[in-house]
Image (cartoon, rainbow, N blue to C red; front, side):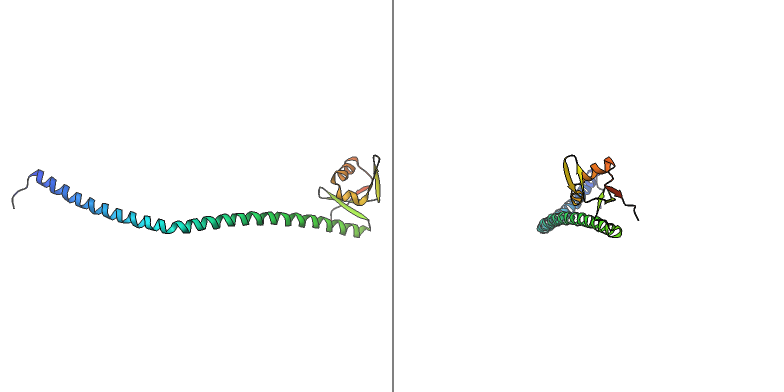
Amino acid sequence: MADKSPEQITIETLNKENATLKKDLLEAQTLRNQYAAKLDELKPQHAALQTENAALKAENTSLGEDLDKAESLINEQTKKLANAEAAKDENSPLVVTHEDVQYRVLAKQVKIGNKVVKADELAASPELLAQLIASGSGLLQEIEAK
């Protein structure tokens, strides 16, 4: 074999590298095409999952609202039950709650200004109840927590 010139060695080396790069490029293009096909295959699933996710979020919001309503109702009923139990224990006609404190109503009605307010109206009017409590009315007797 004859000695090769540096130029021939460089050309042969570059040709080998070029062949390797072409092979790598072909493999990369094949992979790109496979991934593009897989992406196209997954797009409908992605859209379906996005739709399902939106529906589940809406359902979650609705269930959260239902839970809030149920908790509010439970709290309201718990207060009413506590008031009824307190009234039963003391043979009082009515027990009302204001800011989580129970009060026994000691009369069937009270005159506030020129208006006569019945005891059962106090339970439905937090404003009147707060006014009586703030004024230190003798109509209400605080019930000690048990």
